[in-house]
Length: 512
Ligand SMILES: Cc1ncc(COP(=O)(O)O)c(C=O)c1O
Image (cartoon, rainbow, N blue to C red; front, side):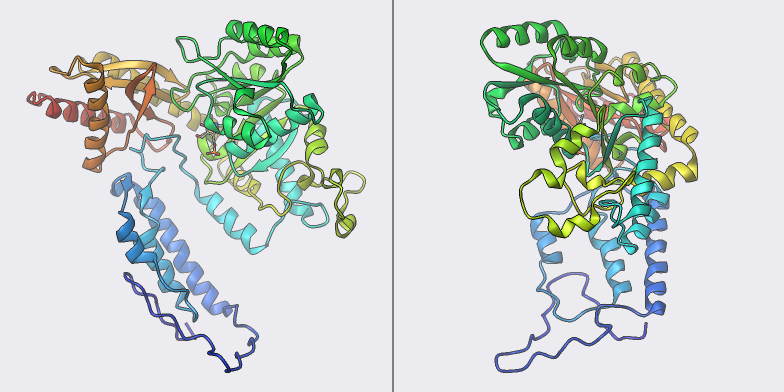
């Protein structure tokens, strides 16, 4: 390093450098103050890559979860604004050592919580490159190369999911914004600016981002109808048809249905084909939230899902879930992409956009910022592009199948064990179960508490992370087994920890 800079201390606040005081003329900007020399950049960059490789190669060595208390973190990070700069390499070290490890390590092979992605190394480099290039796949004039990469990555996703070529869309931050984007197009297409009496339908198992999207789109609480699911946690087309008929009779205006492929709780799959038929009959928009589960269609086993997805009007798909991409890599795809343009194109809004005229798309140019809510947007697609080019689609297909195999394995082990009850079958790499050791309380509330205590005890071992959810009103343990680095031995070890924790809690000696 050619400059001498002061590294921030690992803990505790640092005194800020003195800003120019009153009456003292501030020193003018010196060219190069916001840049590093090529030598400095290379040295810090090499160090960052070393830290990344260290992180990726040693994730399984530590616990899947690390957490610190708010006071401890405030002591570590609540610093004064650094008026003068510090040594970049030292700062990277500090972040990698003290800050970034605090959280869930979603790529840990024994992390079964939420919908854990793994990320991948080409995607890390994709972010590095596209950030350095300030890539913006917004208007063609602004980022023609990045736009073309995004269009190609979208075409590959469509092919992986079996969607027809005329579908279109864009990358967004994740499933929540994908749901919002698709439902905005549905609202505008069906309601023509009049929300009075409008009704949107889903099951109570839909992701909460559907309700948030409804709220942001101007629909009141009573305009989203969340129906109780069937015994398999699926939206019931007959119950839905009856509700739509009743709402129509009452003078209301049903306009869209959200079907979930892979509910977050249990991985349940709503009957998309039947729901599509129902929506066609009633002239409603069918949005499929496949944020997690659409990836099933990528696998050998889930090939049949491809036909069903093609019946939708729009689809949410999160490569940052079961396509092993880092956050934020979400995607929304629409049967008729012109309907996205109708909602989002800048020219639709009656503000002075004169400065944008030079960037209007000409001939067959595409302005992706006309299809979604963001104008300046990062090149999320490059992560998908580079990782598919590096590993090949076949490896992704096999990795998705591996996750399905793991959940089958877990279900078989649970079913065979006298202390464990499978409460929902392995749906799209997600399963739920209860721990019922000898002496387990019969009182439902106490048995529910036991599940939470078992989850806490397993977490406290630092050897696995599986959290709880509610199924049919009861607390259950939940596992999502989609990490391609996870082995059947990891599953067995995690279930062994559950059994041991359960037995310890009911003070029965451990036989395992
Ligand atoms: C089915 C479903 N939809 C939407 C979302 C929201 O996705 P994101 O967190 O990427 O916004 C999730 C997240 O887990 C999900 O499981």
